[in-house]
Image (cartoon, rainbow, N blue to C red):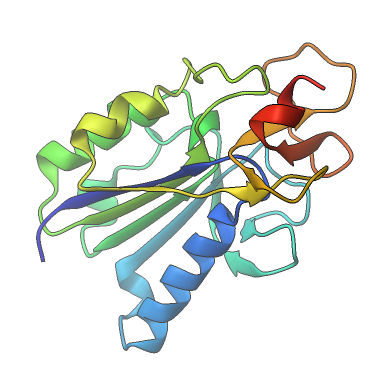
Length: 185
């Protein structure tokens, strides 16, 4: 196994968390020891449960809940880890630096990061620099949802509440997946 970085990007309700949960579950079912897997979710995402990665449809898997990644000394404390799953990557202010450090210092590591590819204004999340990891990725998956208005492919997240905060953790009451036609309408 070589070191690889997998980015799973897309709007809300596209199945990014489900992707991570299914991948981790598949590894466990294939005989990979739980001590070789590290699952991480951002501490601000407590919409459905704490210390878990949760999908909008109720699937869950236990995970560390962290505000930043630098608090983990993965090469030392988690030296047996072979798989790292990070959900809500766009919220980690130290994502770019931490992942680059892992890619340089840990061999035989598979890193899977799920996150939004843009905020509600279709602007990059500059705090995490998640899109700056694209040149380091060995695999990029772009997931789409279905438009809440017409059912077409929805690559965008539209905020439906009156808030101008760049980061507003929410669900279906705050956001809808939309196509380009319904992004502005």
